[in-house]
Image (cartoon, rainbow, N blue to C red):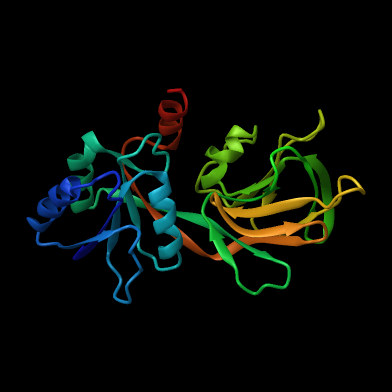
Length: 273
């Protein structure tokens, strides 16, 4: 390993104190380190050997979408709260860096979703999930979900989540959906607060194409919805509009330090609240 890109959320490392410590530590092993603010980071033409991300899950997600498809593995150092996507907690930082320097780590490939609306050619990536949800707090919406052009189900609900295995521990979990091992290739469709007693999540193949159409709950008004990718509102849609979701051709790589595995992380982090 010769070059490392150190990407910092400066709201969580205001003086770059943690970043500078890591930079100095790696430079002792003659590794070239460049520190970049996460909001300014654009994947360079000359690829780094690794991206070390200092922040929380949100920071890792933003970087992962910019780095997807470039085969640059991400090592997340948690400076946030939950830190489910970050591999390393701050107290274990030096141990993790030593593991990286000695090659005692593995790479996990994670799938990414792409979403688009209507005939718009622009597609946007999502690491955790794509959500078609209601625009107004006081009203439910009706959405029909189609899988490979076959009607799967219709939901009268606050919306529907299409999640990756990585995102299965995020909003999907809070909405009652299942947790998937993050290195799986699958999609999870989970209704949000459905107005029914028998609507459950469904796990689909990553090869499936999904379309979500906004229907009409009442004849007296138009259902209004938004399409969010990883929490960011990208499109506003309404009755008759369609969102398309499928596995993206890009993926991103995560550095896994030998030791604590996914299930230990799940027990320790999800049982703390």
